Every structure is written in C-alpha cells, then in structure tokens.
Image (cartoon, rainbow, N blue to C red; front, side, top):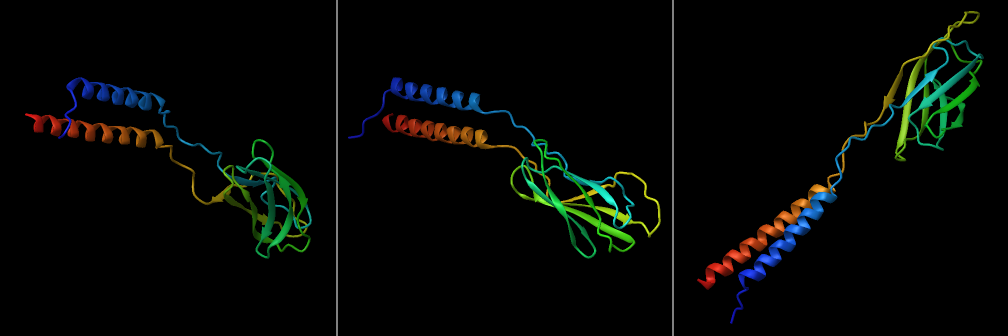
Amino acid sequence: MNSIPSSSNVTKVLAALCGLAAVLVLSVGTASAQYNVPATVTASTSTPAAGAPITLTAKGFGSGTTVQFSVESTPQALGSAVANSSGVATLTTTLPANLSAGAHTIRAVGTDTSGAPLNVTTAITVAAAGATTTTTTAAASPTGLAATGSSSAGLVRIGVVIAVLGGLLLLAGKRRAESV
C-alpha cells in the first residue's frame, strides 16, 4: 500500500526547499571580469648601439617570477630579473658588442600571475657603429591569450536547486493525482 503524503508534509518540504534555494541565491557572488595588467616589455631606447647599456622593463609577470631577457635574430641571453610585487622586472645590461646593425627583437620570458607561461617581445633597431642613440620607449607585442571570464558556480547551484524543486513538484502532483 502506498502511503500518500499529506498536503501539510508536501508544503513543509517545499518550504524547506524554497528556503534552501533562497540561501543559495543569496550566497552567489557577483560576476566580475578578471582584469590583468597587459604584459609588455620595453627598452630604454629603441635605437641602441651594439655594446651600449640598455634598461629593459617587463610588466605583467607574477610577483617573484624570474624573467629571462634575450635579444634575437641570433638569440643571445641578456640576463634575468625578478618581478616585484607589482609584476615588474627591470634589467639594466649591456647589449652584445657583436650585435649587427638593424632590426632585432627583445624577448622577456617568465610566468604570469596565474603561473601560466608568459612570453612578450618588443622591437629595437641597433644603430650603426658611431651613431647616436635616442631614448624612447618601444611598443611591445604580447603573445598568448587574454584572461577573461567569471565564475559560474553559483548559477550551477541555482540550476540544480530549480531542477530538484521541479522534480519534487512533479512527484507531489503525480501522487496527488493517484489519490483522487
């Protein structure tokens, strides 16, 4: 023999489930975009001379991350620096004396704030021997994907509660129809 729940019991269960749904809805945090500092590397001059000092600044790296700097066309390591609490690593070094005049790429490699690999570059033009240099900031070209999105865990909880409530209402309606 099937026991038919009284309407008072069904009402109590539904009230408890509505209370649970309200708690879950109120516990959902607001969605927020994840804004990351754009990763860049800049040089103190965009037209340095071979063998001349240069200051390189990399931004957007994880705090405490070691950032490796190199100059490319024929890759040569320039040194490394540790990113500060703002994610900025600064290296003052000397360009290799054997660097040919013309276009080259400065590369900074490390990890971003989430621990993912980060690789950014900027272009410089090495001046011909005896040329004067100008101090400017070169534009950077970040590589990799932008960090976007927000947490949807709260919406999933709400969806589960709504599905459970719907199932219970169907079950209560079915039992009530059987008893009539």
